[in-house]
Length: 98
Image (cartoon, rainbow, N blue to C red):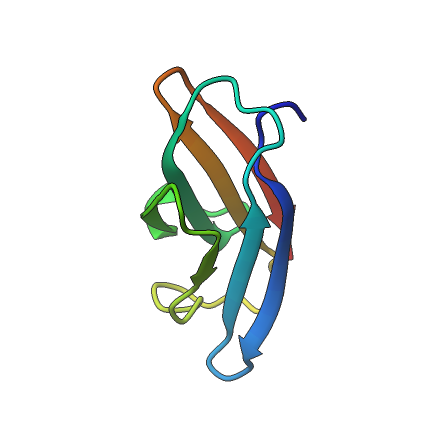
């Protein structure tokens, strides 16, 4: 996808409580200068207010989550993790489910 963060990868860094580290690369062809990244993660299919979000500067390509079940823990449900580029024009998402 043109302008989206590339090669989003998730690594389990701690099993109990579950924590993940996400790494990615900057977009190959950004539409406009990247101002930063917006990270969102939570349980797929739950209310958005149960999700966590963070804003990162444009030079960061790594983020480790806090405990994923902090607000609610549903081990049978997959989590969703997204990294979006923030630019002066718009956001483009790269999404991974786990």
